[in-house]
Every structure is written in structure tokens, then in C-alpha cells.
Length: 420
Image 1: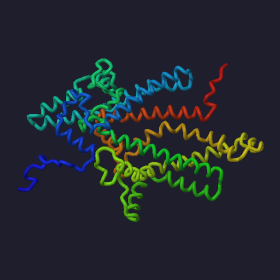
Image 2: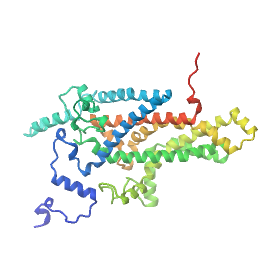
Image 3: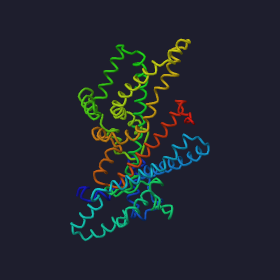
């Protein structure tokens, strides 16, 4: 008899070579019975679900930190900041309500299709499975009650772990995978934020000095070359640049640039130093592709804004007074020309998270974009809705950060409106 015929599932390694997180997950799956979602207690969360738990804790800290900062800044009495903070609350309420109900406007959803499929099978266990789906996703409740449960407002009346929602960092349960959304997007959202952060740093590090040089050296050979590269970068679609990069790296360099990890670490659960280094070796590809168009556009914006500032009378007056050119350039014109960059931060974060779905498919990146697109197509209400709310929250927080940076950069914003 061969080992396969004796039941491979009954064998195990006394000294496995897998990582600690993989061993912990296998041990948990073998020794622990997973209860129904409605009876699941927080204490039963295994080591394999740490990413989802960390994501929930991060969301709770963000919401709590925003409320705490709001109270402090409101106490300080700055009218500009107070108005921005007070506008965040109704904005998120309206966004969450629109997202939840708009997703359900088309007829049917994933759960309805699944229950119809079970009814047509005629299986004896179909009735039990349909009952479980109705209980898990509260199908028989009204839309308003499900919205309150999804947002976590019901938790304030019961204080039960099963009633936690968005306000408590619980993104709901995916209809397609029948798993908590936190567990599905735990590592993906961390990788997405890492790519977005590096893309922003790459864009600013290249666009700012390049735009300043093009404005100071107007109509020089370098200015014409940078203008040509800027137009080319803005004209090439990001997914086409990804395909070209894949071909050139494979044909000329003999290396594969798809994915964020090599084959050794792609399926490894948990994080090690080697996996982190491997991520750094691969992350430059999506950063380069995602930042190409944005960098080219920002170079043109920075050049145009700085040229407008350099032609203003205060620059001529400062030069006549003997102000050193470099100090004059960096202290006044560049500072004012940065306003469009800072004001665009509000839409930059959600765009980097959601706008790279096609690029992620081309480069096989394990990030949020493809999963969110699949959830929208399948009408996975809680998955898609939670991701859209997270993107909206990032947009709101990004707008707040850009407002605070503008408040620091431009003294004119701190001035109150004129009084009659």
C-alpha cells in the first residue's frame, strides 16, 4: 500500500519546517471546532486571525482617536478646525447610508442567489443551510435594522460581541466567502497601505525637485526634456506601463516582476524578517507603475504654479532688496506653489487604494482593489459596503490632513472673514 491510500490526512510531522504562524493555524484547525458566526466569542479568535484582529483594533483606535482629537481641538476653540471636525460626522453618516442602500438597489444579491441554488439542488441538507444563511446574515430583518447592525449602533443597546459593527472595527461578514471581512482583508489592507505610502513618497520625492528645476530653468534643454517626459507619463495608461515592464524585465533581464513576494514567501502565513525583505525587493514595481502618471502630472502642476509665483511683484521686490535667490525661492514661491499638492491629499489616498484594481490584476498583487471589484460585481453587500466606507473615511481624513497642512503652509487661511 502506498502512503496516499492509507489516508494522508492522518499523518503529521513531529518537527515541521513551516513558520510559527502556519503551525499555529494548522493546530487550531485540527483541535478547535469553529462555532456558528452568531455564537462566536472574541476569545475563540485564533492566531491565524491576528491580522483581522489587528485591523479591527486599528479602526477602533482611529475612530476613538478622531473623537478624542475633536474634543481637544473643539476645546481649543479654533473655528477653522472645529468646522472641519464637525462636518466629518454627518458626512460619514450620509456616506454609510448611501453605500449600504445603493448596493442593494439592484434586484437580488449573493445570498438570494445562493439560497435559490440550494433550493434547486433538492439536497436534504439544503433547508438547514438556508436557515443558517438566514440567521448569519439576518435576511428576515428590515433593511434599516440591518444597516444599524452593520454600522454597530445595535451594539450600544446590547454590548454583545456578535452585534459589533463598523464603529467597533468589525467590517461584517462576506457573503461570498462566508468569512469575516477583517480576516479576508487583514494582510491585504496592510500591503495596500504600504504600496500607497511608498507611492506618495515616490511621487513627491520626484515631482517636487523636478518641477522646481523645470520652472527655474524655463525653456532650457532640461525643461524641454522634462516636459516631454511629463506628457509621455500622463499619456501612457498605468496598466499598459505594467504590461511593458513585465515584458521588458522578462525578455531582457530574465526576472519576473509580478506579485509582491517570491515563490518561497507567497504562501507563508505570518511575517518574518526574510518575508519583509522580500516584500521590499518586489514592492518597487507597483510603486513605479502607480506613481508614473501622478508624478508626471504633479511635475507639470508644480512648474506652472511656481512660474506664476516667480512673476509676481513681491519676488521682484525681494530680489531688489538683495535677498539671496535660493532663500527667496524656497521660503516664498515654493511654499505657495505647494498648496495644490497639499489640497490634493484628500483624494489621493482613496484613489491609490481603489484605482489600482486593474494594475493589481495585471501584476498579480494581493491588495484590496481586485477583491473590492469582485465584491461589487457579486453584490457582496457587507464586503463591498465596508470597503467603500473605509475608502470614504480615508478621503475624509485625508481632506482633514490637507486642511491642517494648508493651515500651516499658507498664513492667509488662518485669517477670518471680513466683517461689515
